[in-house]
Amino acid sequence: MTAVTIPGLDQAPTTHARLLTWVQEVAELTTPNEVVWVDGSEEESARINAKLVAAGTFVPLKKKPNSFWCASDPSDVARVEERTFICSVDPADCGPTNNWMQPAEMKAIMTELYRGCMRGRTMYVIPFCMGPLEAESPMLGVEITDSEYVVASMRIMTRMGAKALAKFGEDADFVPALHSVGAPLEPGQADVAWPCNETKYITQFPEERAIWSFGSGYGGNALLGKKCYSLRIASAKARDEGWLAEHMLILKLTSPENKVHYIAAAFPSACGKTNLAMLEPTIPGWKVETLGDDIAWMRFGEDGRLYAVNPEFGFFGVAPGTDYHTNPNAMRTIERGNSLFTNVALTDDGDIWWEGMGEPPAHLTSWKKQDWTPDSGELSSHPNSRYCTPMSQCPILAPEWDDPKGVPISAIFFGGRRATTVPLVTESRDWQHGVFMGATLSSETTAAAVGQVGVVRRDPMAMLPFIGYHAGDYFQHWIDMGKNANAEKLPKIFYVNWFRRGEDKRFLWPGFGENSRVLKWAIERIEGKASAQETAIGHVPAPESLDLSGLDAPVADIEAALEFDAQEWRAELPLIEEWFTKIGDKLPTSLRDEFEALKQRLG
Ligand code: GDP
Ligand code: PGA
Ligand code: MN
Image (cartoon, helix red, strand yellow):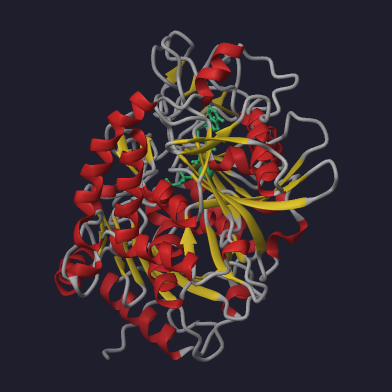
């Protein structure tokens, strides 16, 4: 290897040979001005934030301690599914829901993009751990990035720096995750506030357990511990090792009788995970505490129950719609400071504002950095604007949130955003039927990914953009997980929809804190206390079995939200058929059987 002298490269606080070799190779390829080994300290964080303020990327907030406003390039605001690749060695291990390219071909393309791409910038080496540091085998990774924004965000979203590096020893396994915004600087060239590149690649190599990301600074594309590692790479690892890596929140529900249940719920991006995870029940005596709002890793414990761990350390939540009425606990979490706000509006007195926070101020700086007034005729905040805030600040964080053992899951919810067809809540008959519900889950697209919003698509287990291998194999893995378990101890599976609409397009169900009524019904079903009605699609609440006491909503709306409509479901059948045809030969026979049985029942 030619000895290239890049300041900082030789100051590695580790003797881990594979890590040192990789960092050296990346530095030689990308040719940064200097290399910084990130330790995660307060001093370092202050230095990085100051650099971001000086660059015009961050504006310090006057109204929240140690918090910053940030506006991205208007073209770099969401995940880019078209540019996301699963580069498995065998194409049969990928698709039909993923983009694929031969690993060598992808590496050749991306290597040329990476060549010299950090010129004029600092290369940061961020050791991190997904999930508790005290886990038996901590899930380690290292992100190399040339973005200070990524360093600041990874500090909130992951356990990182020296405390993570301490787990590496001489030879611990780790996921190498390479990121560049792809915006080299020539000598004397002024930087922009949000560097990025028109060309973007978000690439996973599942066999190598490696991630290469280029061209974007947006969370889901650039914070590689999150969707890339904890879902795409982890799902492939989980398939090999017999566990599940899922796009699920984890919450703790305590009944008035002090009985505790843990619930995991999978909803597509921007369909209500963070809100449900932090819900304030409207029904007296019930309590919700938060363990995670986006990702759950689940494996069977010695007692035969399925235990869930949240790999993350912070919340990366959708800002618009969040306020003291809808999600007071998210508001309390961000009030404590130490948070980043991207693509929301900035108030004249140095606070943040977004749509859904009540009456707008007379003047704002919009996410496009333009003057904004209530008459501007456009949104002040991007619909996918985000807050990034430490989990530890959440006032209803469950005490066991950092326990490496995880928590035993009683119920799994699958849900989507459907204006029609899907009732408020349906209980599956058994595990296989629940897997069918998950595998055929559908939702309207949202602003969390680039593309048209509001289009109904199948989003299996809310994992469509995140399954790191073939979707048919993924369904089989879910079926097998149930087959190999004690059926009595498996979580019960429910299908929910908070987003059904009336003819005038208003939501039929009030949602948010009122969703506690659905949680209660689910738990009472598990405990054998609530009654249900059998329908063609599963068990729905019997009249009066769903607690509606004190609910301020028109009875007709609630009935319409709960209704099973055979006509609407018959119209759904060709869409499921089309979806299963797309999955092809790898579709498990058991799911095909479930589909045939559903058709029979619908007549
Ligand atoms: P996540 O991306 O899945 O975590 O979704 P969020 O919890 O951040 O919610 C996304 C959007 O859906 C936000 O604008 C929320 O205000 C809205 N939302 C969340 N829960 C509900 C609900 O129960 N009813 C309605 N109508 N909207 C909701
Ligand atoms: P979320 O995901 O919308 O599920 O919170 C964040 C992302 O866009 O990656
Ligand atoms: Mn979320």
